[in-house]
Amino acid sequence: MYKKQRREQELTGPEVIEEIIYGLESGILFGISSVISKMGFVMSEMGFPKIVVPAAISCSVCCSAVGFVYQTRGLKHGRAIVVSTCTSVASIVSGVVAGMIALDEHLPKAPTARFFLLLGWFFIITGVILLVSSTRLIARLPRPVQKFLKSNIERTHSIRRPGSARGKDPIPTTTIHTSSLHLLASPTKEKA
Image (cartoon, rainbow, N blue to C red; front, side):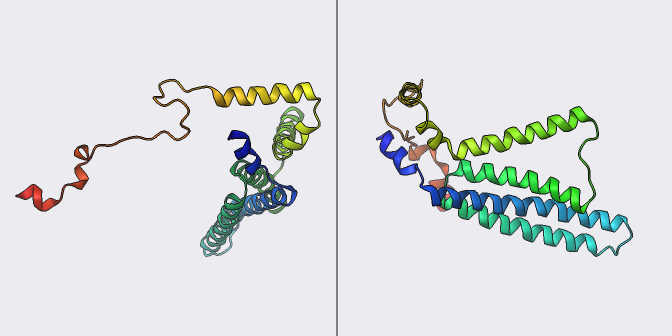
């Protein structure tokens, strides 16, 4: 049953591309949204009219709202882990790049700090690529490694959770007796 569910969750090439695109679109909108709101405050400090701040915040809210629409579409059609991760990475990268271009912000001047910042970004982006293409990468591994990974996955999912009353029921249920629910009593009966 687990293998059948896993095969149903496996997505083909165009579907993976679609969830990545939705994640990137929403992340870029979130990153631009933060830069727009910051730009409104910076422009206000530079002497522009005070109406700039509410206008920038309004544009920021609109960008965030459209970003949520794209993210929701991606979550509806794709895997949550891929869409959410792509959204986060795109938000970080687009926010930093837009901040550097529009707000004249700079990377750290110290070479060590700059190196570790760029190294962190490299690891994050590499992790996203590995996350998205993990099924194709596993297919290219030697057979003994594939069997080892499959046995670990099956072993992890077959372990019974401690304290569980049911053996293999994947959806535990809870029984609540109606006598413990005070919400079901009508107010007219309580007054009588």
